[in-house]
Amino acid sequence: MPDDPLQPDPDEDLVTRARNGDTRAFDALILKYGEKLYGLVYNMTSHKEDTNDLLQDIFAKAYYSLPRFRGQASFYTWIYQIAVNMTLNFLKKRKRRSGMSLNELDSSAQLDPGLVDSSHMANPEKQSKLHELQKRLNEAMLSLSEAHRTVVTMFDIQGMPHAEIARILKISEGTVRSRLHYAHLHLQSKLQDYWE
Amino acid sequence: MKPSVEEIGSLLALKRHERPEEGYFDDFLREFHQRRREEEALKAGPSGWLRRASAWFSSLGASKWAYGAGLAYATIMALFLLAPDSAQVQSAPPVPVNYKVAPAEPVAVEQLNALDLRPSSQGSTGEQEF
Image 1 (spheres, rainbow over the protein chains, first blue to last red):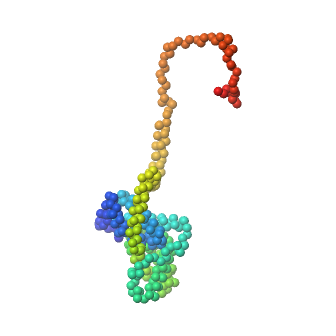
Image 2: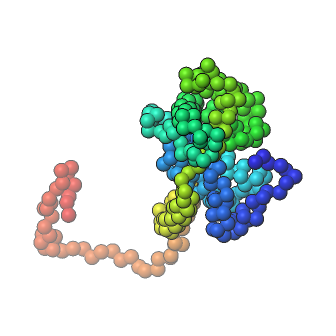
Image 3: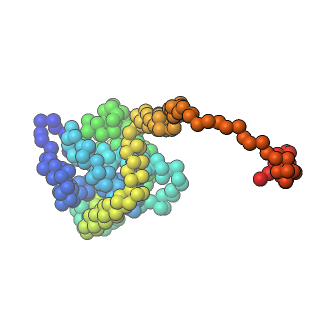
């Protein structure tokens, strides 16, 4: 959801009410953006419990920082930035604490089978191969650095444009593109043994 | 055979549909409000004051050093100004003495002999102990 300076923030009313102490307004914001932020955090951490704790901390930080939110960006961009920064900080600490093995991380995500390519539903073999491929893709994602995994998550998984990614991560669009290029090459080589 | 970048992109795009289990966000909201209630309860106590002061200080960024230096300076100046100054204690104005100073009456020799002038005890350095 790129910010358009000409368009008012669609969440302005909810944000104003939340700022004035209306907890139901903030609940509405959680329900509106929770899934999107869950996807971001989960794809970066690959750990459900960590995702839940981080998501709690992210929304708590947003809740207490609301008085300081000036509305220069949309609420979604603002909270997305909080989410990215907190997740990256968490990953740095996790790396320093211990080298987590891939076994501790969820290499196969909770994938809604109804939303996987429905043409494969009639073909269990293809369905099974697709699931296997998804599992390998998750493992390959974990082998990327945090910086590369972040841009892949934001662009390929969440569908954000380069300009928005650059703004949130405070890097140039060129850097976004070069990180994506490297990440794609890396994923290609990791998946070549499983590709037909 | 390597997958193409487009194929990688399509595979990654499937992950867009990944979502937490049913009812996750109902539990999430309950937990969120529970944590806020616990934090409010903690804030009410003295530890809450310290925590808030610490959080405020941490949020200052680089300027916290200036605030800290200013606070230290103010504390030192306050202690300096509040400490009693001997120069500020004014001695009472001299009161004219208007009583006669009469010489002591001579002590009789018999009274002097009755006095016990022996040293009672002495300290290690020769001073008299009382």
